[in-house]
Image (cartoon, rainbow, N blue to C red; front, side, top):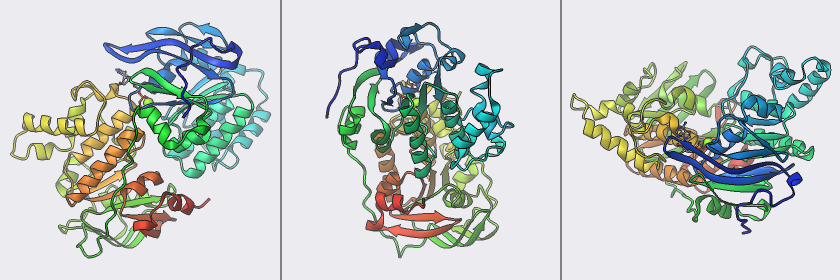
Length: 508
Ligand SMILES: Nc1ncnc2c1ncn2[C@@H]1O[C@H](COP(=O)(O)OP(=O)(O)OP(=O)(O)O)[C@@H](O)[C@H]1O
Ligand SMILES: [Mg+2]
C-alpha cells in the first residue's frame, strides 16, 4: 500500500491544485470537529474524502462550500485566498455542494430545476433554447422527464436531479456528500459515468462515501480524516485493495462479519403471509421463522419495501392475511410506536427525516422513546431503567458523542442513524423489520450492527432486512427474497447467496 503523508499546501505547483485548505480547524463550543487540516485537491481529479462516522467529513466540505465558517484556517481557490466564503460566493466561484437532502423546488419542472444554478448568474445572456436542449441531453436515460414538476418525482429521481443541477451549473469543483445512498447499481453507474465525462472536461470532484467499492471504482486520490485530523491518504487509489482502504480509514484491520446461515424449514412461523395483495405487491405465501434473518431486495418499487410496510401495518393490505406467531395481525395496526411495541414488532424506516430521531432531544431520550412501555411496565416510568436501556444501546451502537445526554442534532449523519437503529433495537421486539439499516454507517460500525442483528436473531427474533446493499444482505441473511414487479421473483438460500449473484440478478 502506498501511503502519502498529509500533503503540505504549496508543495505542488499551485496550478495543479484547484483547491487548497490550509490549517483548517473547527470547534463547536468546546468540541473540536476539525484540527489543523491541510490538503490540496488536484484539478480534474476525483478526490475521495474518507473517515468513520463523526470524523469531520461533512464539516470540512461544509466549510469548503461556504455553509459553515472555520474557526481558523484559509481556503484557496485557484491559488487565491478566500475570506469569509459563503454559499452564494462559493457557487459563483464554481464550488457546489450536493448534500443528501435534495434542494429542489417542487413546482418547477425538472428542466427548470436544472437551470436554477445558471439563471442567477447569467441572467440576460442565456440561450434558453440551447439550455433546454442541454437539459434534455443530460436527462436522457435518467428516467426523468424534462417537464415533470419536481414535486412529482420520487426520492431517487429528486436526488439525481440535485446532483445533475450541480453538474449542469458549470461547477468547477463539485462536492458530493454520500450521494449514492438509495441509488441502485444502475443509478450509481450512471452517476459515475457523468462524473467521468465531466472530469474529462476538467471538473474536479470531492466524493464522500462509506462504500469501498465505489471509492475504488471512481476515485483517483483519497484523504482520510480520523477524529478531525488528517490521518493520511493515497494518490494512487488504483493500487489499493478494499481491505487496505478499510485499514486506512479505521487505522486497524477490519474483520468482516459473516453470519453462519441456518435453515428453518420445520419451525412454526413468526410471520405468516397468505395471498397477500397490497397496493403494489402480491405474495401468495411467505413464512418467516423465529430466529431467521430474511433479506428483501430488488429495484425501487419492485415490492421489497412495499411488502415490509404491509407487514408492519404501515400500508394496509387489500386482501389476504398476515399473521404473527401469537395470532395477531397487523392490519389496521395503529402506527404509534407504543402499539407496535405491544404487538412485538419494530420497524426502522429508511426515511430518517420523517420517521427518524427527534433532533432537539438527547440521544438517551431518543433511544428509550419507543420503549417507554417496557421501561414503564410496572406502571411508572423508572428513570433508572430508562437510563440503563439508553446507556446500553449508546454503548452497543458505538455512538460518537460525549454522553447519551447530548442532543441528536449535533451528531454526524451516521451517528444519527445509529440512534434510530438503537431506538428500534431497544424495544426488544419479536419481529424486527429494518429498512436500509446501515445506510450512512461507516464500514466498521456496519459490522457491529450486523453482529447485533445476528445476536438478536439467536434469541428467537425474526428479522427482515430490506436493503439495496447486496454486501449487507450477503453477510447478514439466511434467505433472500428478490423482488421484481411487485412479486418475489426468486428466493436464494445458503450458499446460493453471494454478492455477485445478487448484483448480477438485478436487471439492467
Ligand atoms: N452543529 C454541531 N454542533 C456540535 N457538534 C457538531 C455539530 N455538527 C457537527 N458536530 C460534530 O462534529 C463532528 C464531525 O461531524 P461530521 O458531521 O463532520 O462527521 P462526518 O465525518 O460527516 O460523519 P458521518 O460519516 O457520520 O456523516 C462530530 O463529532 C459531530 O458531533
Ligand atoms: Mg457526514
